[in-house]
Picture: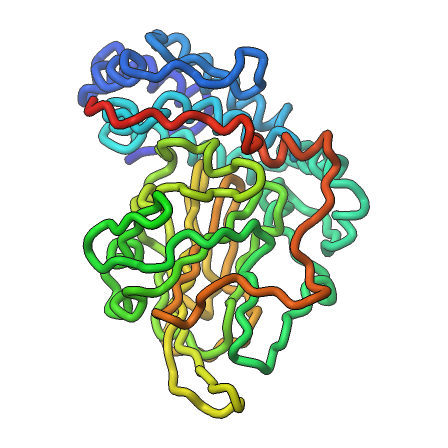
Length: 400
């Protein structure tokens, strides 16, 4: 497809496609708003947006406002606001809303807008957005990072950690798994199915589809998946959770940009993503690395070899999953525990780790290790938008 050169070009395309019903775009949008669920948050909530029966002028103004806000109003404290506002159009997973996000001209238009957002965040003008984020992150958090003369916001977004700020735990012990990123960790599946969607704690995942039918997918049947969710203000590089050698890697799977059925539920305060249907992510832009690693027994001796998979997933507004050159060439290549693999640009993202059956029974911590942060109570609702007491209702399937 041919991308728009600027926001004016994009908005003109939107109106033209609607007026001409380009490839059914008018029918598609009208059906999405006709069957949209009532926005489940209070009208005073900053993320409130009622899509029910809204005309094309509403969509036109929404994209216009979003583009202007991203440059002049977005910050750490409201970085997901417009993503959430947009998510209500397909809230609950009704078919017309999902089709608008994921199929045909609706998907093309969203891809076009996402491309424009990328250009916007790569432009010199985006430096003023950096200033807002630095101020809101504060001196304490910014002290973790190497300070550079960032040319644009995306350069800032993938800022690098100082060498001594993320020491890799038990680097020589192959039994110790480390976090792949600054993230909120949630055990999501402990009995991965092969082809069918096996519900566990209301979660489903098809490991073959997630790994795009990799020849290594079978190693994770019956095993464990762990989600590692990155918040917008997180350090956005991801690293290897174990040492070994990367035997297979891809960074080009899928291509969906939006369309999570209940995006706010993924960000609920507390057990982030608990009970979430991760089958949503099978079509999102993602990649994976398969690491062959050494297992050891209780005496520290060899106990064979096995595999760990790392799946970076680009969620809403992520148009690419970036790997370092080392992982895009000839494989296998050796990796150390905690070695950088790649990064995400602006937007929501997560890593999913897959382990073989019986090898990763639980998230286990030692005394004295970090388990979380004491947050500023005024900032917590902005970083974790929904408390357990106010979790959003997930509508039952309605067949639409």
